[in-house]
Length: 68
Image (cartoon, rainbow, N blue to C red; front, side, top):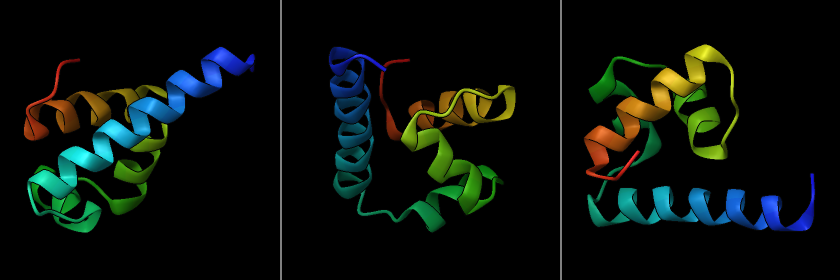
C-alpha cells in the first residue's frame, strides 16, 4: 500500500476512535449496541474491506454520527 493510502487509512481509524471517545463508548459497547461482534467492529475501524466489515463500518458511521 502506498504511503498516502496508509496515512489516509490511519487517519480514518483515528477519526473513528475519537468519535468513540466523544460518545464515551468502547468498541465492545458499540458492538453490543449494533448487534455485532467486537471482532467485526474492530475490523471495521481498522478499515478491512470484506462485505460484512463494510456493512458493519456503515452501521458504525451511523451510530457515531459520522459521514460515510
